[in-house]
Image 1 (cartoon, rainbow, N blue to C red):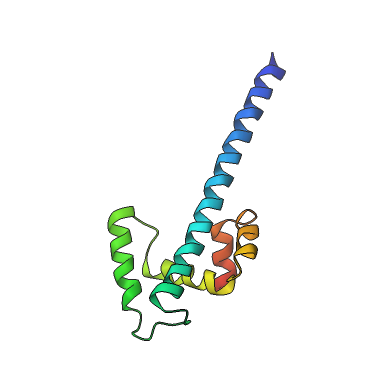
Image 2 (image 1 turned 60 degrees about the vertical axis):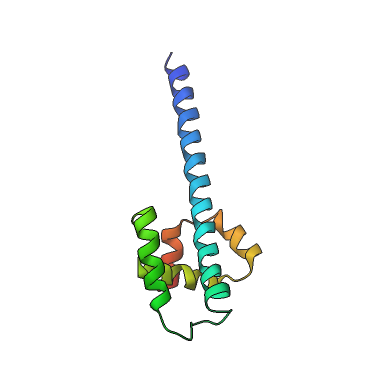
Length: 110
């Protein structure tokens, strides 16, 4: 009976881990795409917007209002830097499946 219960526990633990990995990968990819959008669309491909940082503050307010925490000015700057660090989408998508966002933030801020 113990083996049966342990096997079911293993199935559930594996499913939870797979779900966590899928969500993490999707969110890291979303953060990269947000950074890309900021750089390519709002900054016309330049590393910094000519008109300053006001756009990130406005974006932060709008996203925080709609989606809640996680879209502070500092985080949006991290998303932008994430994209600037890994502009090649093939590298980004490979990395997305390997590291959590907190690990990327550590590397970006080091």
